[in-house]
Image 1 (spheres, one colour):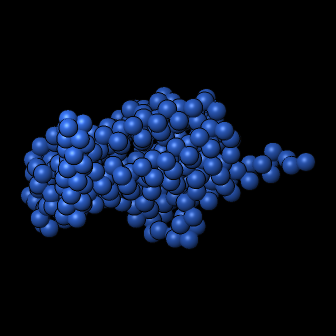
Image 2 (cartoon, rainbow, N blue to C red):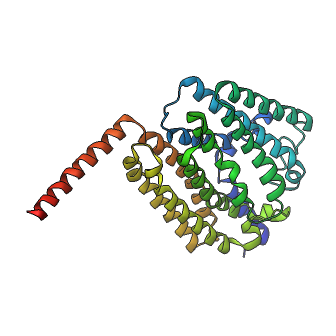
Image 3 (cartoon, helix red, strand yellow):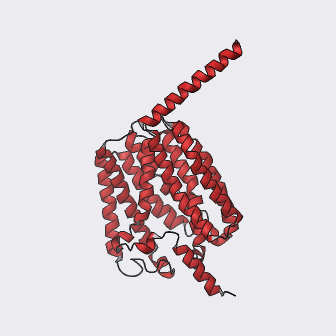
Length: 336
């Protein structure tokens, strides 16, 4: 019969396998506090926001300034998050060896780095893009640090539902960088990321629920349990699928190819969600859903970009022409 200690070790081992690269790649301390693994997806949704605008594709200088400013702001937000949670990280086995709690970096040096990145991001976005993109980027940074990390995370199980606004702002940055305003299409991608975030994050939180419980962070799986959490994941997952379908209306052109290609992404997402719903305590299924949810959002953003290519637009036009001719013949036959 296995002891509780053995069970905890098994769960810890599974949690460590969620992101295998963490075992293989040891980041230098100064890069670790910037949380670079989170940045690519934020930049992907920024590109998605750009692809939804009439002005796509952007000029190379504006594209570089937008993505560079976004990356610097995300790095600053990650560093400030690490500073605020330094004492918390010391108390969790999973995070106690990080750069700040282990003393590899000092508080002052990380704070200076975060401020420098924030200023550099602001200058880059103001000078190379526009004031709206710069303001939205700073709003995202403040939302993550102040709204999510400081206010919501330690106080409510719905922290990621409302705090997810920080991760949903990059599409607005992309849209504003491209056109100077946001528009309904930008708000659609903002909404999609908002409903996707709880399903994505709670899958990870199931794996880490014991860690969060040990330091009193009220993550949903730690407070309500896995069964309750998986039911919530299924609701947000279904909402994500429904929301994604409206991308055909958000795209200025090429929406038909997006709508066709998004179907297998949605089918796989629902499959993993319902598998987890049938076995809510299976950590390997939670791990699988977490991984796929990341690929899902990368995929959505890639499909938005593909939909704006000339080939996709031509495919849509030819398909509509063929469909129009077909229905016209049917109508003539019926009227004959």
